[in-house]
Image (cartoon, rainbow, N blue to C red; front, side, top):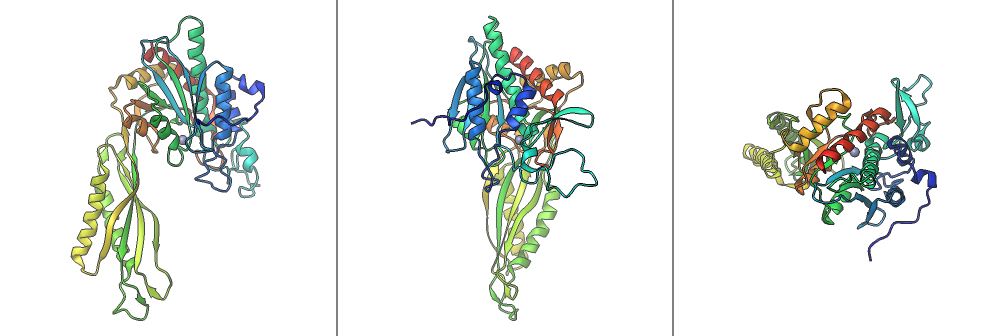
Length: 420
Ligand SMILES: [Zn+2]
């Protein structure tokens, strides 16, 4: 049996809302912390997905409920085209990072007590405030990325209105509001597994209204050195696996200076995320494990990266027969993403954004990994473009109101051209 939306009740006035700024406020007030990242207080996406689903129904938008994992739903809203045109998907995640440690309230004053005040109430405030002289919506997820979802909702309303006026777009307009992007992207994976596709997608992650055409990927590689356990007083018997790992780290530090450079994203990077080794102070440790995270650039395959790390280990083993290790293991990987600057979607968005923002807009790299990569792998040309603000994953998060309206405007004009 297909899962059905849970029965949350929302005020009719909320469900009737059409302004993307007010929608940003409403969405921010619904907790949707990712439970895998913050187990203690992670709420999951059930309530926010239910809001979207009911909002779709209220506005005559076709709604779809996806929930392979209980409590981690994604929703899809569709305004069908009249036929014969290309479809456009707006993709955004509804989960947020934790509300713990959220302070809010703008500049930290002298009487700030170190981040205790504010808390959850501020994080879920969704208030209209002023930052740096600009009107903003504040709260956890306001920028990352409920404002981007709200802009997508405004696009659905626009497509609906055009159809009602007899000027319907030829292609479908789709909003995919997905779970779990902040962790493993189970939402977008579920979306694609269920066959959702489009002829283009805009991931409305906050780019400060920049036109994101590339981002790095990442690979987590476990490296383990092997020593020989012995009592600390017996240097002739023991081999120190932690010391061996020290040698590996030295080689990694050298190696990362030679990593490939991408013209938009810069050099690939590598660092250690975690290290574990040793049981007690008075023994030689038998094992030491690190996880090296490599942030990869387009064209840099995981096999190449792992091969290079294996090469470092082989080099160390050649220098010292006591140096032993296990073959490096890939724990998790996400590919980098790149769309050509000459692609029609990029050119078209660039022109539209230039008109809306009255400024030159150039394709740029996006600093983190995002779902554009999964969409791209599924054959959907994608760009990343969303509102402006500050405090992504930080103590005080806000999104500029004007940039929400501008994002919505760019999406509308893009749909009118792309889907016509
Ligand atoms: Zn995000």
